[in-house]
Image (cartoon, rainbow, N blue to C red; front, side, top):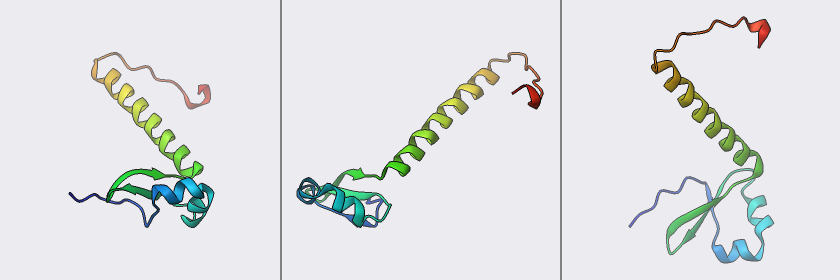
Length: 84
């Protein structure tokens, strides 16, 4: 079975256990794929990228919530930008 690798660098679980910060440094700010038996099992992701991913997920959730409320045929409320 093949596995899509969404990173330019891979490191073994053993290498990650021995020197986790070295693996992260070698990624040069990018995610590092961690395979087990030729299948990617997780990614070692730098903090800034993780924070961006969490923020994007939150934004997507809020957007879905807003879209759902608009689909309920509720009356819109106009709010001036100065009041936000």
